[in-house]
Length: 264
Length: 218
Image (cartoon, rainbow over all chains, first blue to last red; front, side, top):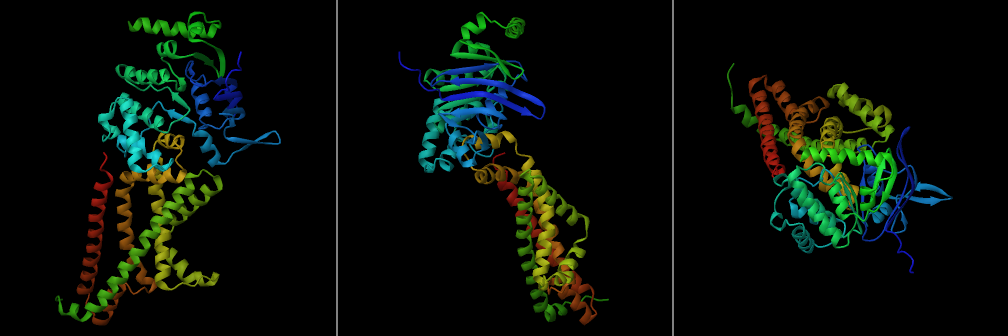
């Protein structure tokens, strides 16, 4: 037996408080290379906050997050956590790419510019080469013909695919998805999930906060169910969906099934 | 009372000289006001309570007192605290400091109009705060802030007339002097009004071109 490879992401005893409110309570998890982890749970369960903490868009209160074995956002001094310098945070963050619920494309730039801008500004790649990479990425998400279009002329599904291309162009080790299909019309969800499935098949490491149970069941290596800021249950998708242990998860899945039956 | 155009030939050089001082004043005061406004708006957005408070106080002081009094304070009371400025410098600094407070409010509205998510996306891609400002925020803000900014520039253009009270030899001063020396009233003030109208018209034309330019992506 060989030792398990070191995880890309390690979260240890994470707490996040807004004043007296505990949004994350003692969350620990690891993500291995090429693993797809789906995080499900009711709204307000803290799943988006967890993802944003891993991206360090929300500084965490206590605990530790390691990205590729580097402590994220803080440095340890005499056993205490001191905020790290922004430059170091940026460097650690470079392993991560993020896709948001609201796409967050820059409306004043063409699609091509949206995807190539960070390559030029951050990676210092020449404009021409950066645009070439950007075209490759746009082709990958099926939008090669939309390079010169502004985001306002694209559908939500297309915008989200551009956002995925933009994140991919930076060659992150891990892609974080924060409810990537939640603000899409139902008929546009499929095209985004299709791109995500393709990425998973190619071995991209992904953490996906989602309400798409079908996607979780099909693509996730592991599913994590959160409620009230804590991980209630986690395991392989099959196990979690077929034989849930906790009452809370059973109830959550039941509600979801009922809603979908009505949908039929 | 008759209109005597020959006065313009006699006072042409004096009026032109005044006009150049007016142009100089507005050409210095406007960029200064925009710079002051941008700096205040940026400091305010840092969400450091003491800094915020200082910026708000500044804006409240400027908006709460007349420009003329602020200029008097700077020019006439300045020397008692060791700040000795010539009239033009005091005038330009005063207009810049005053206009800056108004620009700060325009820019603040601009900054607040950018969805937070766009900034987060930029930060996740590794853009520095400076790059976020110059590549993401400012270009988009321009659409929103250009019309009120053009308005503010026009106000400052016209406010340069007040510098005549500080003895800056700008156009208004030259016109008043012409009134004193010739007892003619219509000719000097018509020339004055026409010159300002010309400057404002030029400014608003430039403004409209700028508006079209910054809205290209919409």
